[in-house]
Amino acid sequence: MKKYLFIILLSLCTTNTFAGPSGYIGTHDNRRYGSLSDPEYRGVTKLTHGKNSLCTGVFISKNLILTNTHCALVCKTGCSAEFWNGINYETSGVKTVLYSDNYEPLNGSDWALLSSDQESIFYKQISPTTTSGQVFRGGYGILRVIEDDEIPFLKKLYSQTKEEFREACSKKFKSSAEFLGCINAHLDEKLKQMGKEPLFADQNNFKVQTCKILGNYPDNNKIVVTDCDSSGGDSGAPLLRNDSVVGLNSGGKQTIFGNKQANAYGIKTENFYWPVQMYINKPLDLVSTTQNDTNKIVNSWNMEEIALDSATSTTSEYIDNETKRLLEQKLQDFDCD
Image 1 (cartoon, rainbow, N blue to C red):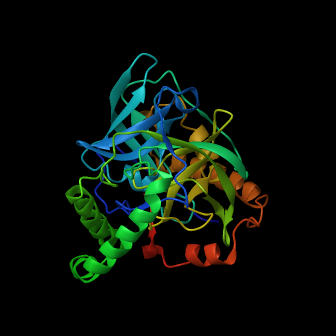
Image 2 (cartoon, helix red, strand yellow; image 1 turned 45 degrees about the vertical axis):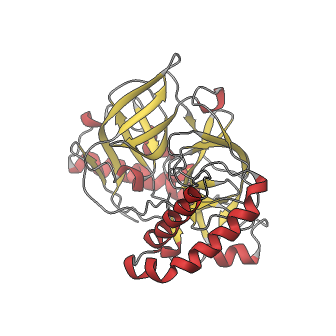
Image 3 (tube, rainbow, N blue to C red; image 1 turned 45 degrees about the horizontal axis):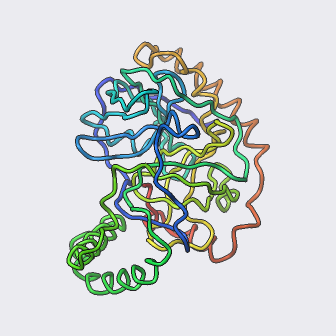
């Protein structure tokens, strides 16, 4: 049986992250600009680090925010959460972070809890299971909403820019995320010179859409693929249905113009439902970290996890061979927003 150990940090740790500035949309960008005050999205938060938008999260109790581990780990010098309080927008600090030390981007452990120093009156329940079907998804992706008639021009310009700066960017940056970030920066500079709106400078606008969970990630029943249009900054965005969290946006393929039906992926609520229930309405900084208490948490989580894993479904018929090939590429070809 796997051992899970939770780390509670009162001073947040330093680590690397897979967060990157790339985007991925489908054939058409079905997002629209929304607001945290919209009924479907009350409780969703904007997470910031310094002056920059970092990720998205969602309140699951008055003082607990659910997001991705790779977002929480960036909070090495402190993060803030911006949320709708019923009258206006309020900003709170993040006091504490809890996450699993077995975190890997694609093993279903990419979730974390943040303790807010301000309470929210809006928060979501977590569904114990994730199923295919329609969801609401809203987040702070840095890729602006793209109009349909822009796509042919932008696609051509992106291809030209990538070819023009491929050598220079590949020499300067070794990782896929950094390389594509370099290409994106050159693309935005070209658009600026043309007097057009940049693609990757929209971190302050909340973008929402109705999209679908298509089914399981190939050979991985902890992850689902979606047709949600996403970009860097959408990490930690909840997949919502009937005012409940049914999945957690986590990452996607690093291209601007999509991967046929599967544009992004998320982790199933089964991966975190039971341990999260232990901390709802309980301040994280009051949780004991003794070995005995840790073992109780470990054992309870593992027993529930085994039962839930056996009930998961097989890969959805919606995932065609080309999509499966794209999803099974090496990890460096993917971006956790």
